[in-house]
Image 1: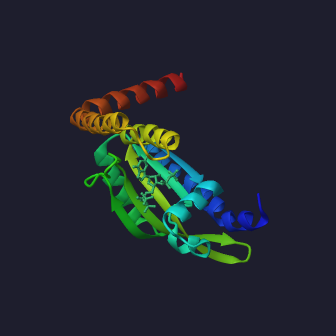
Image 2: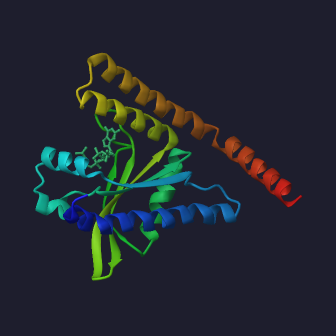
Image 3: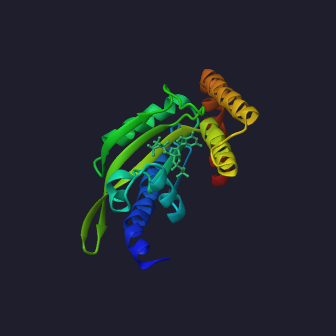
Length: 211
Ligand code: 0O2
């Protein structure tokens, strides 16, 4: 990797690693108390250089403005079991004092034309570098497992077709997005039963481990 990119991306890498630990820590705290965690799992990545250059070109972002204008060079994803968990997670993020929220985008009540659903929170995160503090933008995407399944599949197809889907595939993806939405709705309706079963299962595991 070119030295210039290595230096530019260093605080982003640092931020992703730190935030993965912090956000996963939230899940651990729920587990410790034996209550349903609104967070199922957390992933994070730094955008590959080729994707940064691609997006900069598409959105007309000058390369010396990346820091200010590209919000998802550092990206975290928080997956939830239920749609209602998403708001719980957003509220937990709003209460934190290790970063500030600069923007929220609700693609759940207002899904994208593609069928994409997720809740995006953009934060300003201070990274401690050896030459001082650096504030960078980080995008946190919060979504259900069903929303994540759809987005992952659509993203790989998008790559294959460079965003220009044949009509039948576009329609199928729209239908799949609706099916994912229905799945979330159905799961929400039996949420209580699911959680009871999960709690009983983890109690059983605990007993086994202590035997
Ligand atoms: P990658 O590979 O995930 O990093 P824009 O690019 O204009 O749509 P903007 O203003 O940068 O969006 O921010 P926005 O809308 O919050 O979304 C950016 C990211 O959200 C995308 O990053 C995706 O991760 C995700 N996303 C948004 N729309 C879609 C969609 O229709 N399908 C899927 N699968 N993901 C979506 P990148 O840079 O596109 O890609």
